Length: 229
Figure 1 (tube, helix red, strand yellow):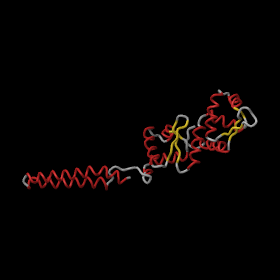
Figure 2 (spheres, one colour):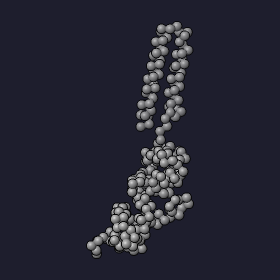
Figure 3 (cartoon, rainbow, N blue to C red):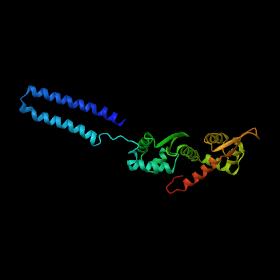
Figure 4 (tube, rainbow, N blue to C red):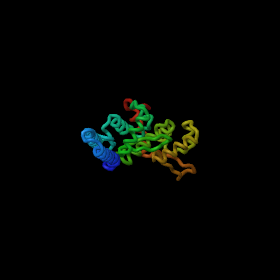
């Protein structure tokens, strides 16, 4: 792919070189050699130097998996996402003191080189490492959900009071039942909680092992230095 791009960019330059060479030859045939020989040599040397410089001294440097972490910014972004999977763009930019537009550009490079992936949760795009596979994605989704205080309160309540239905949760936490239903749905899809209707007309909810571990991990992340709650 890299050679193909260089060919696309380098071919017009090579054709320009041939054109200049041809024009010089025509000029040589029409004018006295003493007037044009210096110009001919200069044009040829300049064209060759341009092509050599483009291919050997960098030209357009494409970001690849091999060089994507060569910059300090992307190194810091990668490490931050490794430490805090599920972080969204503005949070990352704030914590690393970057402009959101700058952070977004470098995050795209990390995604394009398959080091980082993103997913939209609750209207925000959150990031996690490819390296961790399914576990990294699950942890990122869990952390993104638990950043919401109401979701955390519901999770903590179910951890201490398993087997409660929606209205019981809403009354206990003094929340609107529609709000609880919305968070319950997200946590259920993320496998943080499970529902049971075997002994009740209404489903009752329990925290899963994944959910319990996720709330513990989230609490640990909040304790890390420099981490904004």
